[in-house]
Length: 185
Image 1 (cartoon, rainbow, N blue to C red):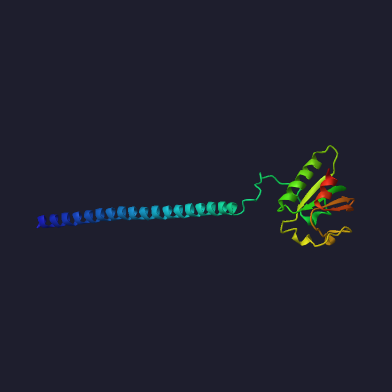
Image 2 (image 1 turned 180 degrees about the horizontal axis):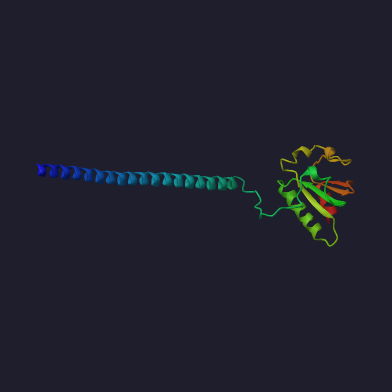
């Protein structure tokens, strides 16, 4: 009888050990499965971000290809290019503002050279430029200019124009590409 008890105890002990080993193997298997799932999730997230990054690069480069005539900036801020609405509020007592359409190649070439030449003179007033092709300045374009303008609400620009401001009011008003170029020379 004692042999039967010993055999039962041994069998029970072996069963317990077998169950414990099976549980350990099962836990390791679950860990491997969980680890595989984590790898798949992380890999999926990385693929998503890579695809998003490549799509962003494609779209931004596509935008540059759509507008090839867009000037490439060097990242500097121009303090001489202003919006037409600021014409009357510059800090100097006396200054010039040149209004012209930068999408017109002929006007752009002539006036850019004239403005650069004027700025290179030893004695000159501060000169600001306004791009009338900008959507912010479209509201100031008119069929007829207004040479008797006294504030920004009355500002009307018809083609290349130069306004000489002195003490907050208009001192001179010059219209026409050739007249503006002549004044700056």
